[in-house]
Length: 150
Image (tube, one colour):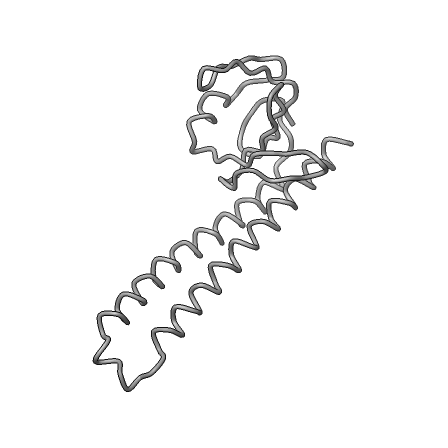
């Protein structure tokens, strides 16, 4: 498959997965808000419980905002042209695994292969940043060879 087309499909797979994260977070926020608002007559008796629910809701709201920002990051990466070296937005194929440098989504499947979406903030990225096809690196005691970067 053409590299540009493959990268588009990888980004689309990540966007779909990120949309699931967003929807799950949104539903959890709504569920907590609903629980906090139930039975207004007994609110005074369970005020600490309601406060705890609202605190959890606020925490989930922060996670929801982060998920939205991550989705925007993925959308921006779709416009970046491929580079011959590892950078944000790169698809990195090694002799042992396939990675997409984007956001920390972890393991996902695309086009029948397993990929790992890693963030540029993780230690692995610091090791592979700027490397090109044919370069080697060591991570966690294992040697890796970069077979392709696009």
